Each structure stands twice: as structure tokens, then as C-alpha cells.
Length: 232
Image (cartoon, rainbow, N blue to C red; front, top):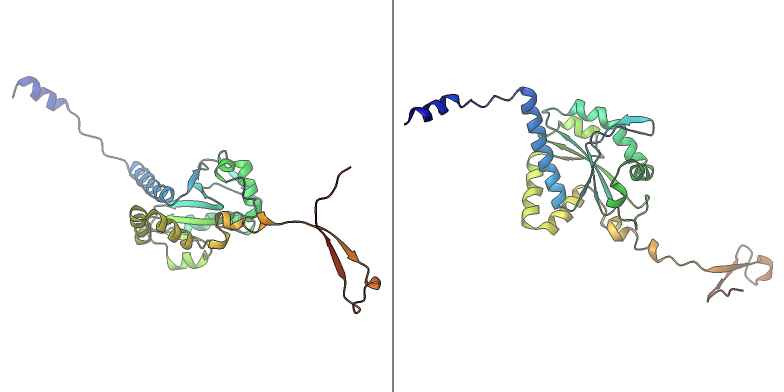
């Protein structure tokens, strides 16, 4: 080997070891990327919320991300902590406010987050949207934490791997299974949510005074006026 090559090798510096903070940040990015990839595969679109502090119903907080699939609004929270109890319970108040005031929360998101209104199809009213909370943990949260948050959906470990495998094999089945996991009623999902309301028809009518009918006391006669109303 020539002296110049030996000299070049000596000058080559070893890669600096990552600090604990860098290792943690790298782990969190990988976890987040994995969860978001799964959500995209089952049909959800991401709305950027990270880094945006909001105040909803008097509570100030921040959401890691919000995802939209038809009329399902999924608020996602990520953690790589082995015990996510403290992390989750600090967010529980604002999560519960979103669930308890879902119609107001959807309206709030339309106004607060750029991209939310375009992600939710305009055919869906705020009332027709369904809000869900997804807690994506790298490790399984304790039974105590899950029991405290029965309205949330927890995804972790083997549960996450199941949906990942299913999404790679049968995309449509993965979507159906994931919606079941989120406890989304099929009759209230997507266009099914507006099927009945979109077909409502209103008619003018007359209510005949009780004394002018031959029916027993307590009965009223309604006359429905069909046909096209004329205009002057």
C-alpha cells in the first residue's frame, strides 16, 4: 500500500457517537414514520398540527397529528416511553374535550389548521364527522392506563404489526379492520353518513282544525300539498 493511502486512512475520522438525546430523537422519528405510514396505507390523510399550540374549550395543548379519512377525524399521539402513563394523562383533558364536544371540535379544526378543510370532503357537516383518539405507543401501555382511557384506541407492538402485515397483503381488508378497531359504525362512515339526510324531501301542508273533521277528539288531519309551487 502506498504511503499516501496509509496517510489518508489515518486522517479518516471515526463517526462521532450519538448523544442520548440524539438517540431518543432518532427513535421517536422512526416510530412516528412507521405509524404514519400505516395510517396512509389504510386511507388516512395527514393534517399538520405538530408545533401548533391551541386552546380548545379553555384547555391549552398541542396535538402530534390529525388524520382524516372520509368523515373520520383521528387525533394521533405518539410515544416511545416504556411507561406512557404520565405522558398520556397530561393530554387526557384536551382529548376528552375533543370527544365530548366533537361537533365544535371539528369546526374548530376547520378554522385552526391549514389543510384540514380540504382534507374533509365538503359533503360532510361537522355533525356527521366522527372524532377518535389514537395513542400510538412503541410499548404496550399498562392495563391501568388503558382502563382510564376506555374511549381511546391504543396501537402498539403486535397490534401494529398485524395492521402493517394486513395492509401489505390486502389493502381493502386492512381499511375495514382498522375502522372496526377505531369503533367506527359502518352505517355512519363515509357516504353512508349522509345517505338518508341527502334524500330528505320537504312538503308544504295544512293542519285541519279539529272541530272541522269528523274524527274523534284528539285526532288531527294533515293535508300534504304536492306539486310545483307557482311563482308570480
